[in-house]
Length: 201
Image (tube, rainbow, N blue to C red):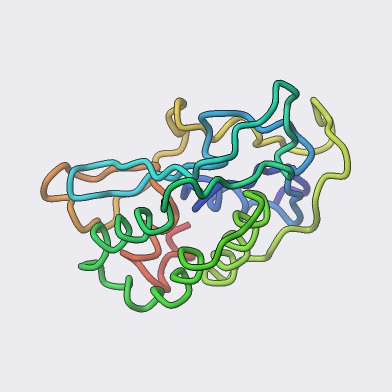
């Protein structure tokens, strides 16, 4: 097993992120980078009745100065939490394990968090516990453009890049409509595979 990696913090992270995490004895979460737009840091892909659906957490428009990812605030100008929760229910109510995990995820769509980083970290902590995976070893203390001694995943798992991993298909609720869709949020795996999700990874 490799030792040491840097990972970004995503909203309902892609399956690929957890698959990579399992390779490391220790890993650190990046919290000092400038917030990059149009990434998984504030969006997740789920399998809706209409196919792949992006759930985006709106953030407060920053000033012209770049904002560190740990300082990005969540916007509540509209009720996105209700919309996301309804989308998750519509997409996964018929899945084998949605009701099994429903009470774990529901609070994230009722309570308000000020910062995106804190929200994502609490979700990440919940998911690693459900998957019985180890949590992060810590956070970065300063921004480094490159790492010579650690694997760097900050730019590799991205909505505009296809996954380099070939994931074995598993049952998805709407696959009879559009076939198997790889590269979705970890909740797609959890709600469909339940406690077997860790073995799948």
